[in-house]
Picture 1 (tube, one colour):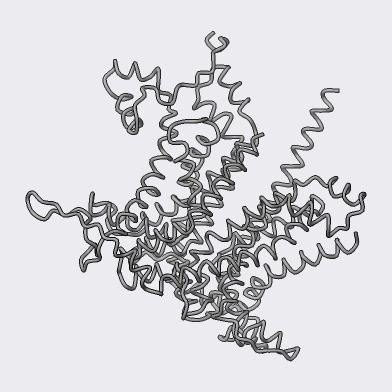
Picture 2 (cartoon, rainbow over the protein chains, first blue to last red):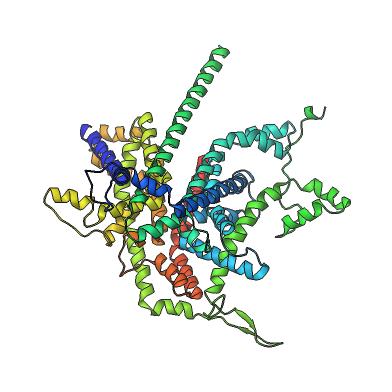
Amino acid sequence: MKSRSLFRRLALFFGFAFLYVPILSMIVYSFNNSRLVTVWDADDSPTLKWYRALLSNDQILGAAWLSIKVAAVTATGAVILGTLAGLVLARFGPFKGRTLLSGMTTAPLVMPEVITGLSLLLLFVFLEQLIGWPQGRGFVTITIAHITFSMAYVTVVVQSRLATFDDSLEEAAMDLGARPAKVFFRITLPLILPAILSGWLLAFTLSWDDLVISQFVAGPGSTTLPMVVFSKVRLGVSPDINALATIMVMIVGFGVLVSALYMRRQERRVALEAQMARADKH
Amino acid sequence: MARSQVRQPQKPPIDAWGAGRLGLIFSLFYRYGPPRWSQYVRQHWSGQRLVIGVPFLWLFLFFAVPFIIVFKLSFSEVRLAMPPYAPLIEKVSEAAYAINVNMGNYAYLFTDPLYTSSYLYSVKVAAVSTLFCLLVGYPMAYAIARSTPTLRNVWLMLIILPFWTSFLLRVYAWVGLLKTDGLINQALGLVGLGPYTMMYTDFAVYIGIVYSYLPFMILPLYSNLEKHDLTLLEAAADLGASPIKSFLRITLPLSFPGIVAGSLLVFIPAVGEYVIPSLLGRSDQLMIGRVLSDEFFANRDWPVASAVSIAMLLLLVVPIVLFQRFQNRELAGARK
């Protein structure tokens, strides 16, 4: 028994070392004074000069702002469409075209990005020829493409959340005379709200992170942050990218910490309420 | 009071007037059309069509139609024009149309060794990386599933955390580690080994893929392993089975669905991977995702790029269908 728990500890230790050493190395080297990424300049480090360089780089800041805008619109659109699709697939029973809809929602999860990017670009070119819209490519085309692939993730999250409880509450509301829209907003929506929130964050991250599809559907003059980073690191390592990575890891880490603490408090509150409800009964 | 009346939950028939494909458009038309029609429609229309229709139309327009265009384009001939291909049906004169269906792009894929070798290489890289991913991910998923519930949540959060940070930056982190004067070779140098050439090799691509896709392997495995009935293992131990034997005869076969799901989630996107081989991989042997993108952007040969993607989809159709089946079964299973 002891050897097995040792094995488990080793698996976790090496696994997490594998996952976190690269990230830690980026954080450490973002404070390095030397331009050579792998040489630690002990005399003048740690330094914040790469952070200053990053924050005065207008190209990176502009691209980051575009990425934030795209990601926010994408996440909102993907949540609306993905929630509808998840609701339809989980609740509407069989209907004509159900197989097609469920196929179209799960396929983007595993579709190679190059194919999605190519096919959407061809669609936009074709549409522009046919009806003159979208004129050129940029914010609109990137956002449409991002919504399309990230709504699949939201759909799966919402659908699996809906699958964890049956529709008896919704049925009861219907029996009491609530119209379907009311049932959705008063019963279903509050129940799936956690799934919708995590779907929004997921879609935001996917859009913020996407390089390949953006490269296909972006036009000249609309460069997202991953596109700038990719063109920079392709030419070799540049230390200000380490600083960028560090900032992003900090933001994500902080966000995850806050949400974990919040969830723990929620759980405690639910447990307490359940206890009180039990006490009331007796 | 109307509220107190017990109403039958009316689930309106989806296809109220048996009409077909344009149902949504028609229903909108009827809804806002002349009153006597809308009266009729109000009885049969409940917004359900709209709820189905909005995501359906979106996905149809931005997911299905693009594929039809790619498919169509893969049979076209390349032309020096904008857009750079010949239409399939061309008006030759007032009365005559020419149909330019051309299999040449597909024939080209088979005759030029660049394409076949890229396909084979991509499948090889994806398969080897998936195997490594399984070898790294299985022990981790197993260890997490057997931890105490509190620790379990911490471990899972730590698995998912890197996923929220940029994929591109995580791949880039390995450049600094794998370079000939990078951190790994510096560390090996301290114990008198190396330096080894690791950048721009297959090994670097395997590392990059395993590193980026590890959560996709661990999470399905974990959700399978966590559900196992541990009394089976106790029974096996009582009957004298060694831990290794009971793992091989009980845990491993039971976790097979998790292995399949995790492997498909890694294998399918890895075949078309573009970023990782571009940053870490060889320049003398390209993966198919890179070939496609070069064909499109550098050579501006849209028809061949389309044929490359159709061929890639054909290659992936079996794993994708397998994955969809699995996904549907999982979602149906969660319901019970």
